[in-house]
Length: 381
Ligand SMILES: Nc1ncnc2c1ncn2[C@@H]1O[C@H](COP(=O)(O)OP(=O)(O)OP(=O)(O)O)[C@@H](O)[C@H]1O
Ligand SMILES: [Mg+2]
Image (cartoon, rainbow, N blue to C red; front, side, top):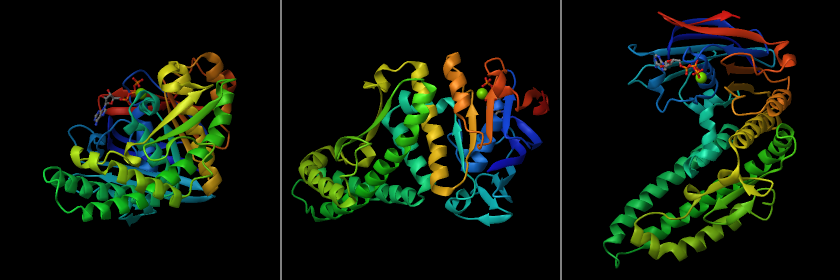
């Protein structure tokens, strides 16, 4: 799978860009604040609808303009796919695949697979549980779209339950039948969310362990799912769990916590409170890993995501790596670049080429990005 060309209008600091990539390995170089990450974000957004820095799609529109347009041609299995996104608030963003409008993002997203790494992904270790849950649920949903629907169903039930808990908090003798109904539904939906997260992490870890020991040369990665329902589980050992078993435990815990939930007027247990921990050779990476070790874990997970996409769909995802060599020593930099398999089209941003292994630079198409008075532009370096 590869991106052949991209066209941008009013995207971040690009007024207009029309670019043909026609290469498997691409390096986007340039001084700070020229538009390297912005171009990578455009490709990331077009292929996955995920942003690198933006909290809202409207931030992607060039300042002073009222719309942004991105269009790209991709090749997959020798056939061409065209993706197109127009952001024009307050209208809903317009999505097109092969010139046909798609109303649901799930119909748009099942076409092209990319995996994007940027510094913001380091929140997986440096951020809070919310960051880790979002990463996990997005990664699961990109392969199993039903997961996203299940999460939104779970959150809707939880909101209704929380509203009920607020009314019960001030009235301890009120009828609690409806609370049992919401709890029953949360246990069923929530158990399926937990089970899919566990199975996904187990599969991902299989690949991530290999990537991680290769880049770090010697270290061993483990992942634990820290659950408010089934306690802490080593994701390599999840075979005993079925959705029925998790639902039963969930149900029992909700009964135990009923009084506390009414007093606190909130849902205190469930997959919305779960977390993940990463261990390197038995030390908790959130607490003890160095910057380089943390970055290595996140990169191993990202490369493992491409392996998982390959295993599930047969496609080689496009790899988009922003400033990827930062914080890594020369050995890890070399192993990382060697660990990226040739079959993935790889687009990397970097201030210069200094840290790249000579062998890596042999077949790379290098662009230089320069911001001029009309916006950013690219030249072949
Ligand atoms: N919506 C926008 N409209 C116009 N300019 C923007 C917009 N969003 C960001 N920019 C500008 O784009 C410029 C380039 O940002 P970008 O993150 O791509 O830089 P970079 O080349 O990756 O630099 P670095 O090497 O520091 O990472 C920044 O100066 C930023 O202010
Ligand atoms: Mg950048």
